Image 1 (cartoon, rainbow, N blue to C red):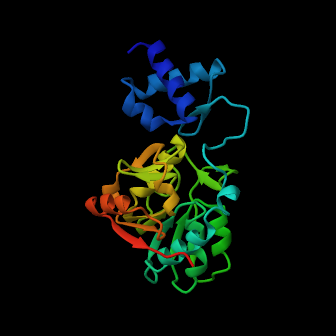
Image 2: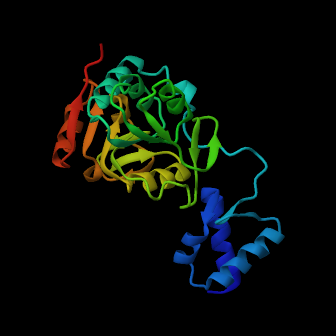
Length: 257
């Protein structure tokens, strides 16, 4: 592959994702590490990207942001259902275990019910950190990365986010939508970061209110078969419950008060 072709592919990946890690470039492009570094340096010299530790990011002047609904707007949506789901999800935790709680308006509802469990929690969410701080028996870890203000979460496009040695018995996450093809999110960078976290948990537990079954569009984060449990409210459609059962997913229904 010629230098011009490699550099065009690099710029295309940056346009789509905003960040690209050197290890991923090494896997995807047929070139030596020294050649890839020269490619990045040339494009940086031309003002087309910014070299950062571990890779490169797109040359942008605006603050980084994610696709999707900001957290403050999501908090008030389906609040009763999310409260019931959060309570039911917290009941799945065992005292003293290590868990990952991904950022989101539904996973946030777990926090008030975790105080007596003495958990070790890895989370990328600043609101979840704030909710857990008053709990003296809850140990909290956060990954490295950039802060995305709309969702109040910390994400990194690179593998070196400080969580490589963390191992959890369970990961709790939300989603933009869920359907027959799997769990979906709206942002590529979010999917990158969440897939790394998924690989560090023994069980994946999805928390979604029943409205997330109505419009199953987006990019697939993982297949239904990768889920251990799905926690939702009593509005879940019957056909959705059936295809979850066929995929081997345990369905936990939490009636909204």
